[in-house]
Length: 599
Image (cartoon, rainbow, N blue to C red; front, side, top):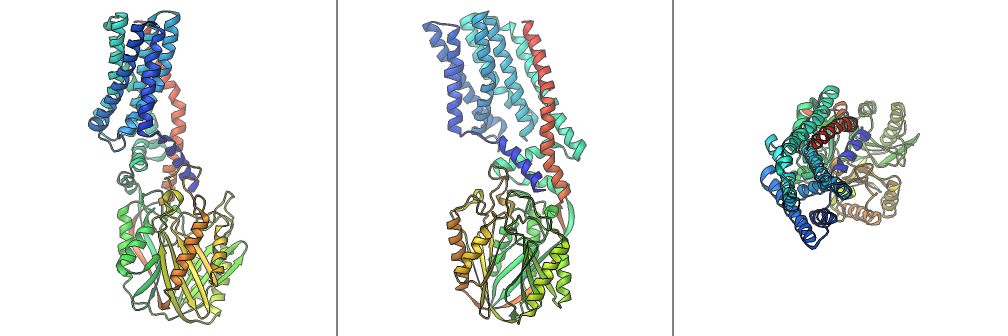
């Protein structure tokens, strides 16, 4: 699943690697004035020819900029096509056109100037085709505006060409008028057929047209608009009952909470439930004036929420259900059990078990949802009423995910529960704190939830749970953090990530995101973790624990099968596009060449 999403992200990322506005505008100026304009001096080698060539180039640059400005501000008014992107598109168009212009200059020098004119016109048609494909595929404005945006800048420039040809060559414009009328039609038809074939591929294979998804993804990728894509997910999704379990610590008021929704925080960026961990944390803290954290539950991509509306349904249900008073006054110390590469951490609060799993230092990705049910069954056998189960999700490298059976996971869970239950339960203290390191951003792999530490003191044992709002953690970093916490006076510790996909699809790279510690200054990260754990420890006070498990009915989710098919659609559509691009546009080119031959 992650592989499919990352393949899609990689393709989309390649589409938007654009120069800045100043660099794009400067490049257009250089191409128009220094290359296109002065190239004509090879055909008209005189002082008048040089001056005319310079004026020609400056006029082309002015026409390009004016056309792009009008397209951006008046014609399209599309959030994607700000002036920077319309200028960048013109830059790529000029690179296309330049090939034909330079070939025309070469053939014009060797034969007749008509070769230059015909190849310039053929380049004009190529640019029209490029612009039709881009605007038809990516813009969401009415079709008339997309056609006008495709035509305006190339026609302004071809008018400059014609004025130049009339002044220096005295050509009869009526000779090329048929081409200027037919070329836009041929370009539009070719682009339309190309896009329609790709669009129908998605409809036929996956039941989803490709282009609306592509446009919605672009709106999200380029300008962070999530509504168009989420509207598609809502239509494609299905209703599921979603479970949320949480462990709350109260003193005179609520002190801290560990909230575990059985929702995958994906699929990427600000779409669906990607932001749920930080949103849920912030809203819970705002209402109860406490610290909260949202580690990953035991599940995979089968329960990604479809939209922000569904996020707030989960949040509202949790807030309404958390008003109860915690009553368990004792807890066991934190214990660990390791077997077959699996480590489980467990602590029992009254009749509630808090238990987590990790495969660290091996890759720890999503764990099967059935594991949560197994742990609850095992907890009931030990007389416990509630179990809050967490995937630590705290180690990733380039190796394959370990093949761990449910039997092995059950064995480790049972051993850890048995060990925790066997220890005497004592009154406990809780302290909590959160830090939001300003040095780390989404691009570095840090979500807006920051780093939260919840410290539990039972008798002489002081343990720390550290939750980082990120998508996994580089292999080996967990062990460094645990060692640093031990050196700072914590007897036992565990570190989790939320698996937030808010950090996904915001950077280029093979994963499409940075796990915690990959792009961060690790010394600074470790210092932040130690500081927040010490801050939490300084706030210890006697607490009571309480657990609650709720079901939020009929939440709209986009299941793993549908999400995977959408991701694979990107890759499949691009492969299909590569197969049909040559036949379609070669046929267009052949027809236009035959038309030019008749001029």
